[in-house]
Length: 103
Image (cartoon, rainbow, N blue to C red):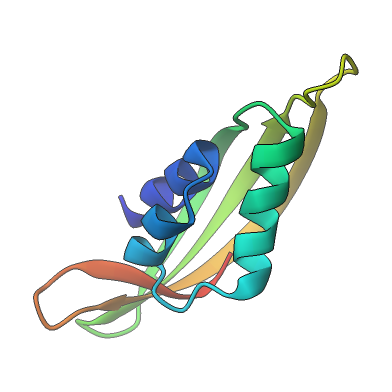
């Protein structure tokens, strides 16, 4: 699942892995990953409530509820953020699904 791979890249704090699944990932995404690497232990992502809509044979829209739990490196309680995230997916010429917008 492409969205799970997207969040696995954030968990691994690996911008190159993110770019592999989301080629247009921005410098803001890089900065977020750098901040996570510097200030937090690897975050956990709980994905639920999936809504997938195929727009065409090569485009799809995904909405998912995400709970992000990140434990700061300093001894404070973990922070938890919940929210609905929307993604547009596209199929590449070689048949792979990638994130084209969202996150």
